[in-house]
Length: 102
Image 1 (cartoon, rainbow, N blue to C red):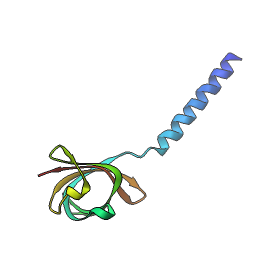
Image 2: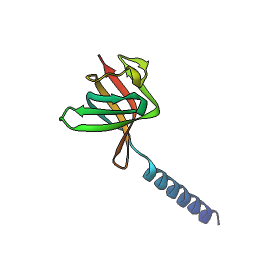
Image 3: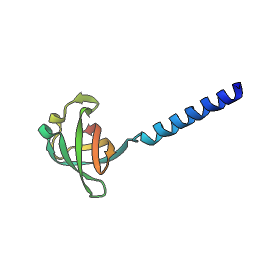
């Protein structure tokens, strides 16, 4: 009886771990230069190092750092060199962290 109960618990635990792992989104990172920024809309256009044009939505609650000092999206400017940490939601890039060096 104890063995059946322990096997059942192990099965439930394995199922829980697998379903949670499948729902996780892994953050990715891209480096580039800001071409356009619309801070009121939380949106920016970034040109990456391979000359790809990327549309990025900045999440409310995301972090912006300029030279290691926490700032806001309104402090970023076109031409700034940035590293953007983002999650993919479908085809949309959702920035969670922007690091800028000036």
